[in-house]
Length: 208
Image (cartoon, rainbow, N blue to C red; front, side, top):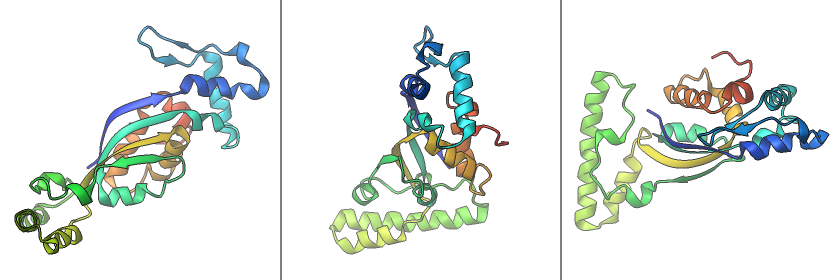
């Protein structure tokens, strides 16, 4: 399970203006804001953007200045893979260490959408045991129960992080993960494809 919320794309106007700096071609810029405040790439600017993106990473530096902030809720096993993309990304997460014991532990706190019925039944019993440990810790304050809880916590536990990235980060993720076996990557790649001008600036010639 993966969920994206509160997406915000920023700084596209400044990024495309900067893309014209090397040739001092600002007079050719034809982008504008529509009546809803959305930034629209004009025909000239879009053609330049596509040309630079196609030319390679040295030429598409401007997309590193297009920023995206989003809340992502996903299981810990997926976050371990996401964390390979450290350069140019920032994330603030909800705290498992501080908050795992503050609410009842329920099956809905975990990604179980790919489990078979038999596995889900066994998992429900396991979660009931984790809730028992949580209860013991909250009642006694004895660290031994908290240690048990943390070390037994499955990697399917869902965590929410507010993540800031740029279009270059997203391009790298999309190209590397669009055919990944984890369902969560398919959801994220679908979200990437929905961003403004993703086809031209991020996806390019990659077949979905």
